[in-house]
Length: 427
Image (tube, rainbow, N blue to C red):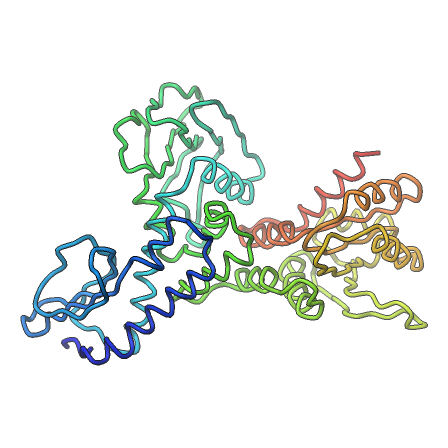
């Protein structure tokens, strides 16, 4: 079946669609970033080769002056897009978004610094592996992982070895022999965004710009959000708004929960509470034989309303069972979606919630997107020191990490336990 797209349809529907996407992305992207090329310089081109019995082309390029409909030719300039025997409305709009996403990834990866890769892969690997080693010098950063293995649901690249060294170079010339590892069956794998690989020698594998572009452009687009954040210097919510403009596939409950958390306007308490309920379900359901969460729970006189209370029984988690043994029969959660960090006054109110009910076991968790003020942080320690009341604060970054842990098959409660241990070790 040949293409059914007419020049009139291209001019009246596709060009306006493409230019509207460009305007929206321009409003979301940071100013004076190389990605400005995607929103201001690139044009949409359709080449109809139906009469010649050849494949037609839908592409975006910065090498033409204006968006245009051509016939019976082939692109003679650099372009990003697709060729096909059939382009039809309305599905062709998806192909336009796919081409724009490929351009976005290509430009972004080309402008990714070694530190961006180091920070992204450090967070990514820490989420998936409990035991991660890290070394750094002036020439490279190195991650050491035992039994690196990514499954079909959470793939990185086709790498399998007993011991893997992931190397991010900071210089243009590096030989694998400069990286010492006497572990049997180890591999040295270099990750770089450079195109010219001549200076990198004797590595078992090199994951280069083209591999990273292909990886993040396909079904793993949303898994690159942490990298996009770092390269663009944007917060999570703003980065997700960009991703939403460019993704064309359905996503998981985990992604939806992150999106709901990060894109809620600060000070919008009700929307934040709804997002937190979804997040708590995803993170805590694996930890109990039967998860029971109560929302907006008033005390007897209805003078206080607790945001969330989790019945802490029949838990599979050793940490949650330990809390139960020290009297935490009910887990108390308080949501704070303030436009500033929470203060000592907020802490004092929450501590009163804890004190009035012995079944909270002198323990509670505040969910605050922006965290706590410096004075409030000191007050946490004083409450612990004087009254043995433990209050853990989870920021937006902590909540997202918990969701990432669930996505990788780890327990989100590990983050609660780490926070708990860090606090009591200050005594």
